[in-house]
Length: 231
Image (cartoon, rainbow, N blue to C red; front, side, top):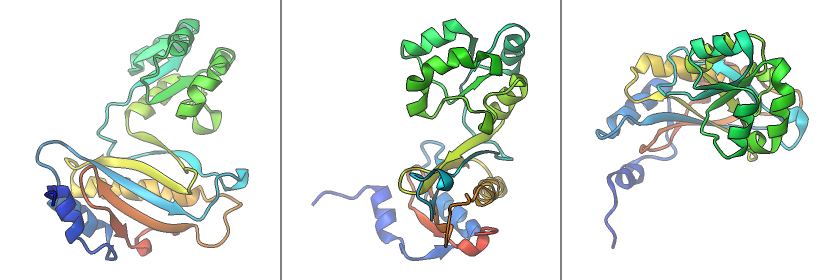
């Protein structure tokens, strides 16, 4: 019989039906955290929506007050003064047609793509490239904006995008195990409240059905929905 790994042993010993408060869940994940690397703390939220219907799509942006603990790579489509401002704000790559050609060649190692409105004619040619990766700039998400300087700062400073997947689930990181408990809880609350506020008009019945917290190597813990404002 194959030996169980430490992670498998932890998961086998956990009561999978137990409901945790957020504080207890964070403490439990910390208790079982790896000593070898800084694990990401992740949330999964099951929603009572069917994203195949336009009026049940859940998508938006939220700034996590304690940041993400991740180095976010940002590409910006801009010219002239806006290009200079984006570079000064910390964008990893700034360009126009040259950036488009670079992406068409397969160089897509970015977490966020931002564009000024006048650049959408160029960016529009990348729909089949950026769309499947969820990187297409969108004015509703603030990634098509004349204020690229602020958009880059927001992306680098802890702003995350959330988007419901086919099965009605949103997955997102809310920080690292190296964060203190209070910061992880603040990020948890900011994200869950933003998702509750983003409830679409087509959602009927129970909206937030299940929430769980886990870490890269840790167990999945069910969270008490009573701790989520508006759930």
